[in-house]
Length: 638
Image 1 (cartoon, rainbow, N blue to C red):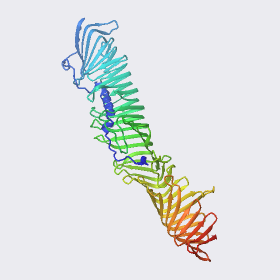
Image 2: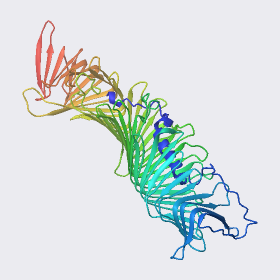
Image 3: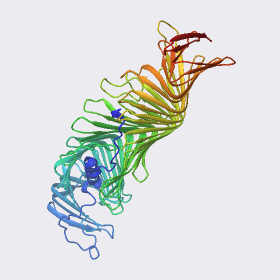
Image 4: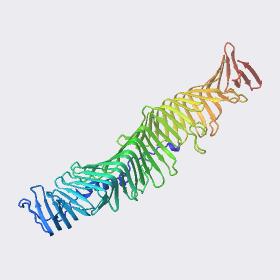
């Protein structure tokens, strides 16, 4: 029964270590997401001086080395430089050679610089088209694109051609881009590839890939969709879509919602992999974590760059693996982990056919907990599995299975409680392991009760409420039952009733003996079961009563060698009653031998004394023996 020892002494896990990779990937993604440094970086480019209030509309045209400045009310200012400027046959202005265009914005540091070799724009100066390879510079971000359009009225940059961009910590590419200065929205399309370096990851880039990326600064939200893949070294997350929202100050991510075929593999580092959680109710190893779900929500604290909650929906699987090969797998229709500001687990909840399975280094399941729900409750002190409808709460180990309406595992004292139609199966024991009580070690033992408790300090199981214990046809009923796992001792109280089958020698038919008492105990060292208080033993038409009844067992297999009764023994067989101080029931011979000044009392026939009375159960014969000077044997046929 070693597998039944519940490893529940600690719940607190080093969650900062456990989720380190997920935090890194999530927040690196945030850094890339915040307009890929288009919007939040405050680094400024040199600004060309201008005075929009005093400037009038002015155009200075030169055929060679032209430069002019244009101001249009309060909408903004424009400055253009080029080697050549002319009106083309298409009735459009053409700029060629070292073209530089600056769009001055009202906000400090928001100016946009465009560089190229050929630009075409309309007479109104509202639509610009870069027809050859061009560069866009915004803050510290540089975009390289072969074809670019700018609508000055709508303040939208757009290109349906491949675009590459770089900054101090960011680089990437896509096949189409659209950016609105007015709405502060960014959209990238097709074959998106972003690489980001951060203080949290100065040497290994975070790589984001997908089919479409969009971000809305004012709404502080965005999404990456279509074949989404985020990688950081050996860590990766994939999904069909990821939506994100920023905090009010846009400095941190608030939520990230991954949806559609979400898969993740996150590896720990030396710090997070230095130890394995032992003797805990929920051992979440940190060397490697794998996640599988249709939806995963990551939520951060409003004022702290740490994860507050991770929740998943639809056929969720979380795997926590140790370098040694140990693994904890958590499954459920939905799963939620909630952490405090120190990174400690404060809430765990798995819903709808939930399961926690623990495997050893060889992959064998050591323990599994199952229920309609599994939750961390009682101020983090208890792991609770609840059943509902056809799904029952259950706990399985290598040598036992427990089912109930509710199972509670406590980390304070390493105890367990099960309630509501409790069913327990103790598996057949391996050679060398202690058997369950007085039952055979070669077969499983079954127990039903209303409640069950496990006391870790005593290694004791306590069953109460209509207890029934059986192995094959050996059956025990009791109001209260205690099984001591370490010693094998068994005690029972209240309405004891035991039934054992036996086969007499040279006979084929099976018979039964039933023993009732007020209390019962099993001494594993002597292999004796002791019944006390109002004891009765019934076999066929013979009823025996005594102060104590003892069952002597064969070592290991639980087979009965003999049954003895002592103190005020009374045996009744039809109209005869024998009284004495000791009786021995030989089940093979089907005889009960009564000694200790035995007396046989027959109805209306008086008393017969002897040194030994033998009751033959098969044929009802009674033999009275005297071994004094006048030895005699009297045979009475009942």
